[in-house]
Amino acid sequence: MKMTGLPLWTDRKVEDLIGNLLRVGVLLSAVVVFTGGVVYLARHGGEAADYRVFHGEPNELRTIPGVLRETFAFQGRGIIQLGLLLLIATPVARVALSILGFAAERDRMYVAFAVIVLVILLYSLFGSS
Amino acid sequence: MPIWEFTVLVWIGSAVAGLLGSLTGLGGGVVLVPLLTLFFKVDIRYAVGASLVSVIATSSGAAAAYVKEGISNIRIGMFLEIATTLGAVLGAFLAAKVSTAAIAIIFGAVLLYSAYLSAQTRVRLTSDDIPDPLATRLRLNGSFPTPEGLRQYYVRRVPAGFSLMFGAGALSGLLGIGSGAVKVLALDQAMRIPFKVSTTTSNFMIGVTAAASAGVYLSRGYIDPGLSMPVMLGVLAGSLLGTRILFQAETKWLRLVFSTIILLLGAQMIYNGIAGKI
Image (cartoon, rainbow over all chains, first blue to last red; front, side, top):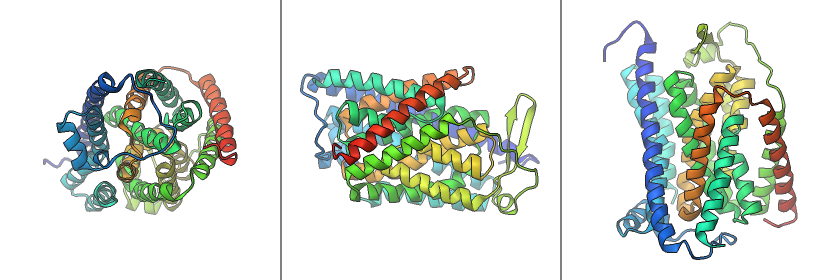
């Protein structure tokens, strides 16, 4: 990457990239959630809604492999959950992208900060179950 | 109530919550959980899960716009996200240990505090333009575009801001909210960051903070797709509409109405928590 006298220049490029990533991630997840919602309502719209008592989600909707299996089985709830996973992944991808951005600026301190945040996020997603 | 009717009503409620939350800068999450638990009789754990997901959507949606305009400070955000994500993981684990009544009471207290904060007119705290050594070392100082050109600002009291952010993260993980009020307190009051930058940077951080607890929530089975679908789509629609109006509308009276609603919801949450109705 070309180094100019203005650090703002590279900052702006990273900011633009991050802005686009966030926009695309949210839009994509909203489309997937909506699609799953249509399938879900078409099949179960007439049943009674009951969220008074907490049962917890079944195992298929709690893990990433489970959600993928449900999606391929074309289950509405599985597709919605996939959209929600995409949504959760959006900020994670944003942090990962920031690592590249800071690295391009040779800002080691902020590469380290971003890596710490990414590790915490990945721990929550994969390590907490 | 049949699922389709429930879905439509929850969507409308969430859209209104998202619109008000975005116009007042308090976030939709803060009224979503009371709305779902008090009016739709949803168990607070499902409500918190759905709210958390919607918080990610609004934060990311709005942040996309602000980051592009160069208002958010990405370095401040990234540095403080270390504190908020750690807090958020802790908060999400606590959510499983604490009783639902206690969660309701803590939630009510946060609502009362948010109402108090939003009813106050923000005093512009001008910082003397002497750079703080720690903030300078962390490269936190920045500038943002104003009609008169770029304005430089200096960040201060970094440790205080960092600690407050840990607390904001823990609340976010425990209650499924963005904790915008606490984040702005840290950025605004403690670190003396200009209003516009603190609001947008806080929004920018909320998504990452919520994602840190979302993983824990998902594996615990708190995120129900049937409920999260209308909540997320509704809040997103409402808040996107809100950010379009944000730059034009005078929102003083709106803040007053919204803080009154929050005040009442907060009192109701505390009452229900104490009376064991949640």
